[in-house]
Length: 261
Image (tube, rainbow, N blue to C red; front, side, top):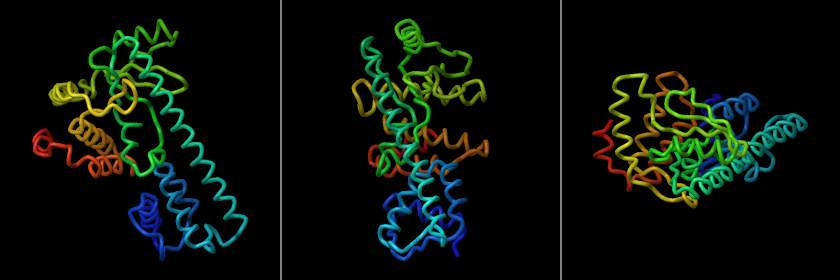
């Protein structure tokens, strides 16, 4: 019998259409795998893999007990559907926020989140979190406009970004890409990231831009490294970088990437 870890990663490969589902049987502690998958941010992908296996092998079950199989499928579907609904709410709020800033000629760059989801075979396989944005030095004016025009309270108690709720979503408005107070070396990295930020990436919604491919790769890699150092790196964060590189490798200046690292 496959270990929980092996089963999880096999289902991820199937859910991402990187592997065929022929020959894999569903066995083991699927309840535990479900809990781990959603904790690691890959619950939707793993469920996609399970659905592909069941479609290809109708006699397979998540549990020998028919009622337990049905209950687990319903529970998993509920989690996945909730995650996808949150993703759509996040996407809608992102577009609405970009439109708001466009009234004041403030371009909005997306960091992490929705932008990275576009590298997935099905973008809503990636769960949505906060809306992380960078406003090209206009963060103070933008926060003032959010406060005055939208009557939204802005929290400025954080080190390198303000926080506010917009259309039911938590927004982190970054004036720095990283926390420059944590390490002296962070200040040099911050200057470098800001120099790369002058070049906008692809416009994915009106007035909503991705970072340039090099900045996106470097920022995503460093963000993952920080979580790794803290013992908090998830499978989803690893996939974020893998799928980003897979999709945009030809657009990334790898000579600069490795020099900058």
